[in-house]
Image 1: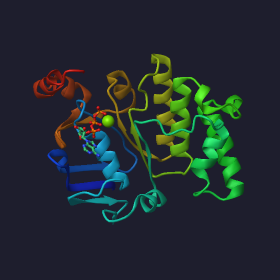
Image 2: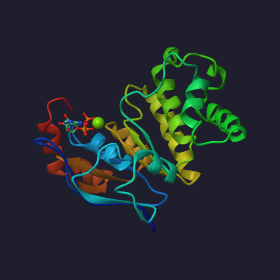
Image 3: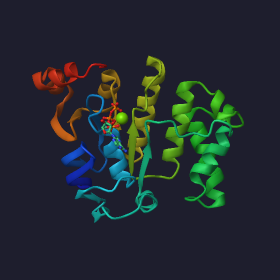
Image 4: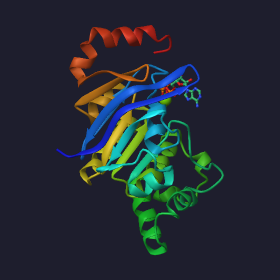
Length: 239
Ligand SMILES: Nc1ncnc2c1ncn2[C@@H]1O[C@H](COP(=O)(O)OP(=O)(O)OP(=O)(O)O)[C@@H](O)[C@H]1O
Ligand SMILES: [Mg+2]
């Protein structure tokens, strides 16, 4: 299978904190894969490095066959990388529709803007809430709005940082179904998650990040039984 993403020797330190420690990682086109790891492992930093929000100290990022290490974020987005970050990125005072307009306006022409907004409202079940201020949506709906904001630009690779944090089990399952649908449309998905039921719903294999390096990679059963993985999670006080 073709690799859509290949990261080689990626390193980034903030003072003494090493968030990526010679990271090697690759993802096949069309995959749906999960990244797990204890708090502070460097998962969110990895996404920021992939989007170009942090410049690495060394190493390379190859996306869709091209070295994008030196490209700025907007150029990476234009090439097909889209991220839903862990920190909320919606404008609470704006309506659901306005949030989608803001997210898509630089990427879509006006006719396709309206069509895409309608599609995304239907996809996330937010059609009735189009004129509702985003801040009064339920927590789950706010997360779906953010997924829609990331997906409407038609990425090849969608990075999701803890998309189901704070969701009910029902909302979590619905989110998993949504990701399967996006993946069936051809979008490669990499998600950071803590909820193992969700991980199991969307991916067969997982990668474990620890201190900015790949600690283990395998099937969910292999990872759950892995004594070293159990240890690094037990070592993290709040997991
Ligand atoms: N811009 C920054 N400057 C300094 N330190 C940072 C910066 N960004 C992240 N860090 C530190 O790097 C480490 C990794 O952070 P990161 O947010 O990537 O972890 P994470 O795996 O996403 O954790 P969590 O599961 O809690 O979301 C943490 O110790 C964090 O405090
Ligand atoms: Mg994080």
